[in-house]
Image 1: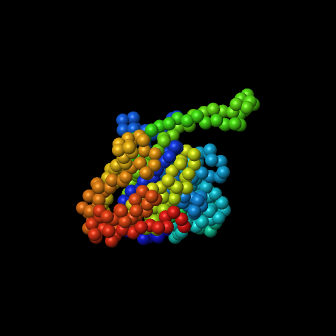
Image 2: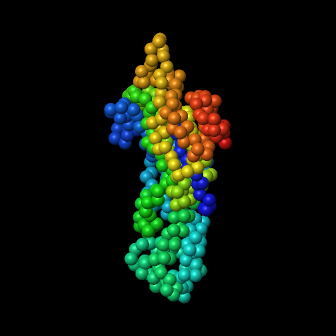
Image 3: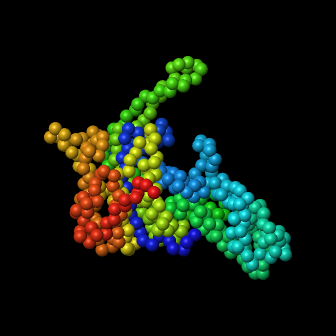
Length: 386
């Protein structure tokens, strides 16, 4: 893993639309998560991260992700312990690499003439390796007997854990981005513990009131008892929603997971592409706007979503109600509050990256920025393709 971690703080504003689908169903009933007071719809940060992970996994393979399925059974629930065990010891090649890393971490500090680890430096086994990582009392006692001279067994184990966590962060891009509680069990328990992710994503919310619609669906492939009738059921959706979320990438937290500038660039692309590519009947969604601000000081606004408003267009000389929105043609984007914020802080803004899909042009976006900020805006033209 490179020592060059994220150089500057970033704050990202992202907007996407959903049409006649369920952006993030609640586990109890799978209905859209609609606030009963505001009538606005929410999408959890977990759901947004899923889109990011799906894109990264497709581009870079299963071993680039910690949070993923193993094998082809999509219904399988995978414990984080099982995932890491699979990554560290799932194949002879993976096991050899893991043993090499641990071997290097203890080199010169274990007495290879003593039991129980006298053969460890020559040909370490997986079982022996796990017992060194283990925090079990009996395993720690064994380690104390095998250390050389006055070397502390706790220091050796601490260095091994630090090395292994760094190895895992270097392997899994989503761990570098989002962190994890790493609730590990069994022999790997000592490797666990909270790892705060440098990229934190806000729960997404619709920028207007939405309309929920429950539609009946049928299946023509009925059971024997159902004969030709098939199965009739309900599907829950919203008619339309323009959603917004924000993400903070913290350069200080990045030092603990190893997040790099290249990782953050991948996150930006995965946020857009993962949203677009996760296109199913229940996730009929389209990315519309992305604004990424890079600061030159440890600062971020923290409420960029609240700086975006929608202004309804008029039809038959009457402004549309929010519930009547069905496309981006039904409103205009009001960024007055956004401009007020960024113009007041122009001296600490290094750059602004901009991407839009039909919502606003880069020329329109620049119009109300101060002159110095206009020159700092770069349109991302390759975000839709590789």
